[in-house]
Image 1 (cartoon, helix red, strand yellow):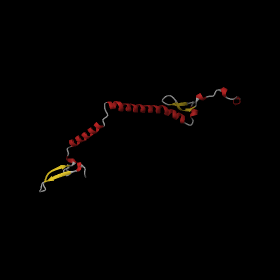
Image 2: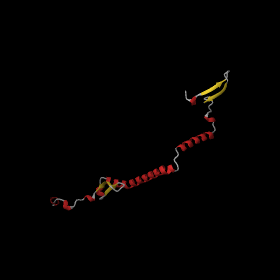
Image 3: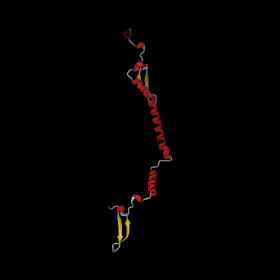
Image 4: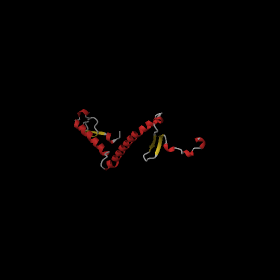
Length: 139
């Protein structure tokens, strides 16, 4: 009750008639329906403008922060779609139980630098030369 904004004082003469007041008048409120529509819209516009001025991202901030993030998100999403478009058929082909009967398919999955991160199928580069087999195994 000691807040300055909530206090109101009414000055009376010696007969009890009000001669003045100071502070918030709690008994002179106007119903919302009595306000004109343009006054309400103007107040809403003013509050919106104040809010947008406080958090406005424009000019150099837009070019430094927002545009690069937008481009990165777009390129990342495009790369993800392209990767899924290329990788899903290979996963489907090698996930079947009888994929060895279909063909001699071998798939190597690479990271973005071209380093192998996994492979499925027949590895043709893991062959053992015939000279390395023991003689008793060949005969």
